[in-house]
Amino acid sequence: MTAVERIEVARPFPAASADVFAVLCDPQGHVAIDASGMLQDADGAPVTAVGDSFVVHMDRESLGDFDMGKYDVTVTITAFEPEREIARKVLGRVRPQIGHVYGYRIEPTDEGSLVTSYYDWSDIAPEWRDSGIFPVISEANLKATLGILERTVRRGYPLAAAR
Figure (cartoon, rainbow, N blue to C red):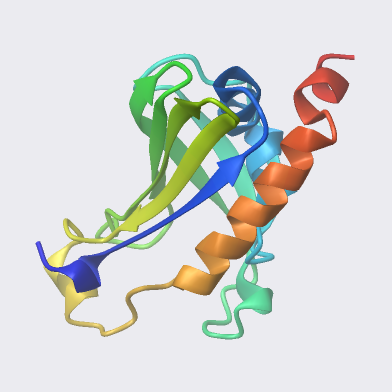
């Protein structure tokens, strides 16, 4: 794998790993923190294990790259280590499935947590690799999403979601 097939960005959070992880397990949490503008809504229960899934209602209009209208994707959890890591693949209507992975690693620190967001397209289908459209999401977008995640956690999203 080369560096051009994976992007990672990290940011310190003044929050406990459990609070960060709670947002990342909630389908609505992904909608709340998305900096791309593509995620419009979600259906499903918070995830608790590898293989769990939920539906995200999407709209690529904010990217301005492909006119796909409004569509749904199924997000399937591919890595799940409570309070440490969560990753997901997106399964949509395109064939073959793309195979890119989005994930987060969380490391406890004395001040809270170090959160790393990653986007990996090293295992995408050859047809998509040859298309030249990757990465779909930029490093700047991952950084922006981490900023929104930090703000969301700091403002009490897990507590508000439990009410």
